[in-house]
Length: 413
Ligand SMILES: Nc1ncnc2c1ncn2[C@@H]1O[C@H](COP(=O)(O)OP(=O)(O)O)[C@@H](O)[C@H]1O
Ligand SMILES: [Mg+2]
Image 1: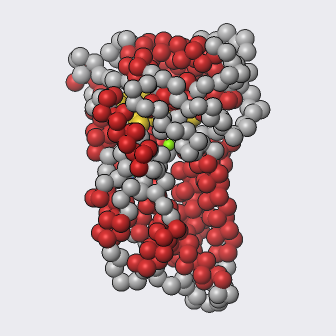
Image 2 (image 1 turned 90 degrees about the vertical axis):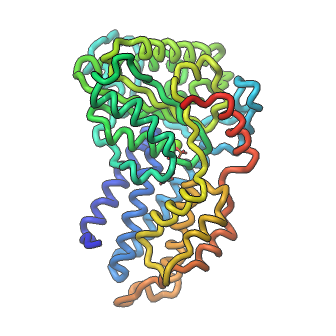
């Protein structure tokens, strides 16, 4: 790899700026992804230019981003939310505490603007329409062949050749499954393919931001998406992350969630019943499919289980995420894959990152980091084993059973 430090540094700061922007808009999933990319660039930088004078600063920054990712993940953890049995597809969390994400301020008045005008609507939701679409390729998404196929069949192909689908095609896809397995990543890969608009909505933070006005805003959001598609004649992909939050139990707003849900159902019916030419797609993602009721599910013709990686996928994940690392001899990737059954894709990535941070920290702690030519030692199999001792899977076996039970009943490929 022959990237100049300057280039890597630029790309780190570009991703960091993007992450901070997304973060401030409450797009948690996308923000995490961008923070991760910033970390990757920084880590690579330190690796390739071990005696660069700013390395200490880079590592501090990488650590700060890592902490922010942790905080973002915690603020919407699953831990406080035991899965309801598959039979009762209603009632989600029992008194879960909602987003620690006290974002406010942002000027979505939602007020009395009566507008069918695209520009006004677009301005209202300006921060949601992503101008720079994420650059994630399908190859970066390991495994998940069903999900990739479904997205290609229902979005990518119809978008490119609508004439080949005289009977129409599905417009709604629901991705569900444990956290950290690639739902948001898949949406980003789909967005990268779309030659049109990508609208990224994090339902959890929107609901808190729109408190009391959610119903109206949902209607405006869809209106904007529709008019972008109709007036500009380009496809529009609306990605709603943590879509279960639309149905959140919110005592402060009696009846509110019912109206929000109904509004959403109406909008989805509008999309599904649209003329064949309509190029408006909705991808919803959730870690808590059991909190979605039947009426809601029906609006998503494709419902796809984004599973924990199997052994083959973990092998690929380890090889993808250790590729940039300087290793001692060859890593026993197959063995690593075998002993990480039950770990999510994002766990595997974290493990690889932790291993690298371990050797870099070692170098700094030895006090030799700033000496000319000082390098972290190469990482070896043992480093992975050490990290694995303290890093447990982030999804419990019970949780996986709940997903499987739910999936047997509701999946639709
Ligand atoms: N299938 C996968 N292939 C490669 N990397 C993955 C995969 N799933 C998750 N990751 C890594 O973990 C991170 C978090 O995954 P994400 O898509 O946000 O999970 P989810 O939305 O299902 O909670 C991603 O940014 C990516 O780095
Ligand atoms: Mg996600």
